[in-house]
Length: 142
Ligand SMILES: [Zn+2]
Image (cartoon, rainbow, N blue to C red):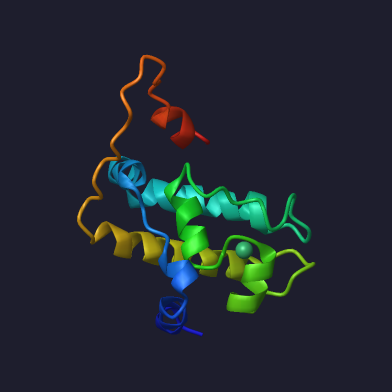
């Protein structure tokens, strides 16, 4: 399977197509740059997906907080079940270096596509005295 084949299949999934970078994740990518984002992706995959039986498999990928997490949902690389179904990566055994490298390529390809889109609008935050600038905390997972 090539990256193009995969993205053609993903384009037919309305669920996968729902995912896009938000303003915060878009800015984060701009700030960090491709080399760092790639490094984060490799680290997440190694820690959260590569073990034979990853912790909390099926629920280990948050829906927000890092551009790579969103990319994982969008590309069906969020858990070993999706990796098995979409990427023919067998479950219940450690992922090989090649399999991990494939996932990283897929994630970076998706993020690259997203970064060609116009920067998403900033969410309107309710002005409340309690509102805290929590963006940095959410993004500072590493
Ligand atoms: Zn999944």
